[in-house]
Length: 452
Picture 1: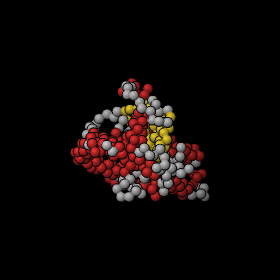
Picture 2: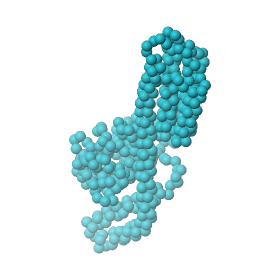
Picture 3: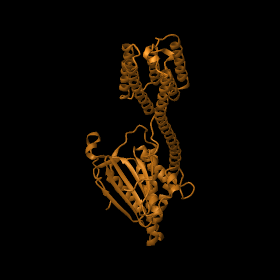
Picture 4: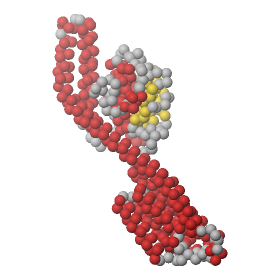
């Protein structure tokens, strides 16, 4: 199977990922959970090194207790993430918790004179990216209050005599380590969070594009239903006229003319059926449950009608293992398959192919032709409304097929074949008869098999 050059209605592999706002918020919280684990581990290492390595007297019990409380809070946030529970203000609460924990640790180890006071900036910068303006200023105010508190109230950090005589400036080294920590953590987490926010924006942009496309479909649907209603009367009049002409002795005596009248009457019946399908689809209730039907029957009926309409275009059909497969019995799906066959026949009148196979829980219907294929510019515009090389007002086939596939939970893929021509794949969710038997019973209708 050829690798797709363009996939419609679903994110392309290797491109920018898409995340819903809910998933993006959960991912941001997950990043904060990881940051808190690093903070707890860093505090533990710093306390042990300073107290036991450098001999600086620290209140070990309360400082370790703060780390334990921080770890318990982190476990709680991680537990909520497994249930996709990120409520409004939860990220602000998490950042305030980190700020309070840092304030408590600095209170016990020198206050505002501690070199690691710069870690307050980490919470403010992360908040400025993740929070709204009002929440960010609340976080800034909290940080300023914590720093003011530490400037007035703190436990003095007393260095032992053996360290005071060391020629190395330990506070300066602490400030350097603090700066390096803040810089590294900001780069690591802001890079990840920014990528996550870009994925959220891409998801929102894709939703906006889909909304615009669906608005176009609604407008076309209203126009089509109105046109179908207006066409009902002239089609009925033409049907009566054709029936009278076929019974007229002068016309019935001409075999060639009689055959042409019969063909015209058959095309007129097809037009009447199309109009009836449009009106029926427009009149369906919005909440009506989607029925399923055998995929082999659907393809057989579409192929039978298409062959009758285009007897001069050969079509090679190959269906493997779809006898027990059922798909959504939607009139628009029939029209989508018909449009794909029509497009292929226009580009390759010498013959086309239709393949159908089941892959996992998906039914793949591929229409192949031997035409010139798609240029790069055409591939970039495939699936857009009225984007076609056939002239103004054309190009509805792939656009409608893509939206039908998306509405049914599938997708449409377009590619050029390596040996010439193009392939369009309609990928739809499918289920076997056995899986659906308990839910909606066996179809019971006789299945027509497409010719091999």
